[in-house]
Amino acid sequence: YSLLDGAIRPGDLAELLVRNGMKGCAVTDHGSLFGAIEFHDALVERDLLPMIGMEAYLSPVPIAAREDGGRKPGYNHLTLLAMNDEGYRNLCRLSSIGYLEGYYYKPRIDREILSKYCGGLAIGSACLQGEVAQQILAGNEKAARDTVGFYHDIVGRDRYFIELMDHGLPEEKTVLPGLARLAEEPA
Image 1 (spheres, rainbow, N blue to C red):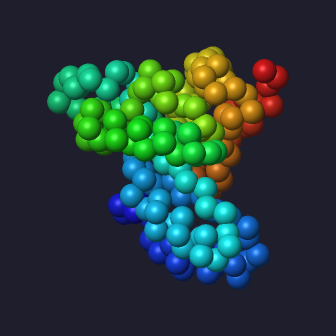
Image 2: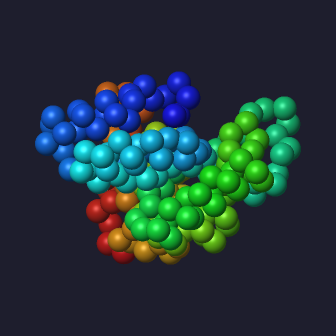
Image 3: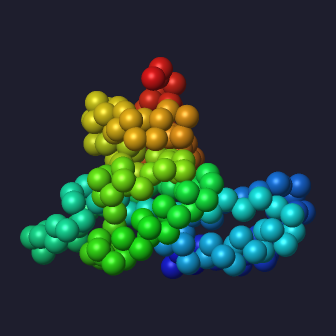
């Protein structure tokens, strides 16, 4: 359901999970929960644990801001996973706010809105387009450390995760050591 970014059908995914002895899986559509129900039903039907999430578009400025000097606005990816019913309700709220109030090229949310609706959520640093990864790529580990601190403050260290992804991209060779250092730092 993430347009041009995902191709597997939920039923086919569930069958693949069963064949490979997996117990569950997460869905994180970009900016939405469009695939959540079909994904949930396909996994539950096969006695698998569905984890519902969203790869949010996080605006660096309040979502009401629309001035960009004619350029596409910046935003970062952020992984949000529902841990319980409260988290699922908050994912629904965040997705709705992104479309109804924050839509500008993408359905965006900002830190203030996330802080208000972070209950029941686990948060991941996301891919190369994540806030922390982009700060490391820019050579600003202090900003990356401050960003990690912000997420620790709103959801706690036990609900914020540094994501490490290695797809063989050159940028990842720069980012991965910095992400690993941040993940190892004490609270």
